[in-house]
Length: 274
Image (tube, rainbow, N blue to C red; front, side, top):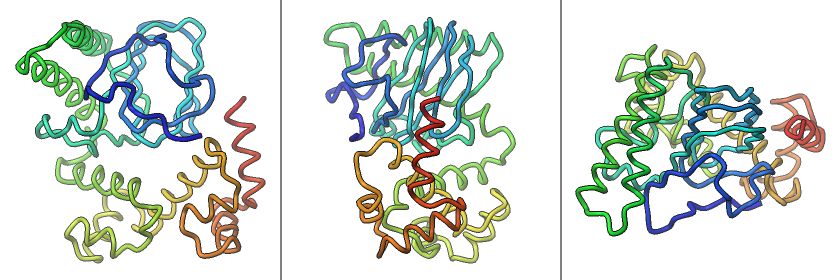
């Protein structure tokens, strides 16, 4: 299926209840072109983000970034969704979109911190419901969102020094956006204004892996996503991801997973639907 577009094209920020009526089939795996922060007030069920399944619990917070596969199976969950377009970061400083590419999608804060974020989200919701909202009030809503994002970033990046944290989030964001067409370490070194040696040193220091391995891992993530949500054949996926032949596509997957493309796709569909 195609990527689900931001549901409110004339807005950058929207707050919805967790059980709002989606315009797309949210019962099936899907992917968005916008950010979504899920605040679970209470309820039960489970959440799939990419290929990780977690049980839904009260006071859970999830961050889903553009392109990730998402499926929320909720039995009786209540809460709020913060949905925002990438363009909103033109109005928020110093937070950037790549700061939200967390290693783990599920975030657990203290009850007090969760309630604080939830109350700020309710304030944003009330502002967004005002007809003909003034420019200052729009920026007030953005400021509340910025506080929420900074709180989540502080919690998720607490093990990194700030310079290292910025490098990690930016590099992971770049390979996520460009892995379809850029596979060389030199491509990313150029985009980040680093030498290839410096990029390699920083990747090994901050992520414990060489940059080429990280690029290949991101490519495998994209292959898995397309196998789950696209209607393309395996041959078409190979072409879409710019492999020069289906044989090289198959060899890449076999080397990374030990499975053929067909075996990998079948295992993903079984796991995702379980």
